[in-house]
Length: 122
Image (cartoon, rainbow, N blue to C red):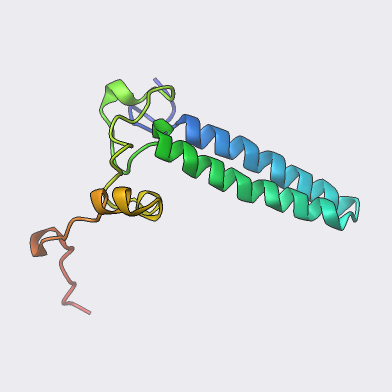
């Protein structure tokens, strides 16, 4: 049993890869700051931006995780997302990827019953 209990923490190939690349970028930018090397700072920050793009591309390729809980059989980080090719509902990354995924992943309208109740005591 893990320290977090029996839950899906969303560890994915996209998440691990993006985090590793961003870590390298921030370490490079930090070292460049210490060395007073301005081009190195920009190279490090550019690497962090690339980490975001790589994570997004891997998410769209099915190596990410949709929002919300997944079945326990898909908790392993090496399991691909089976619905990534059509897009995820309520996923900004899927909607930004183009019209085909954007229309498939358009957020569903929320009913009045699913909205949180307003606090009338205020």
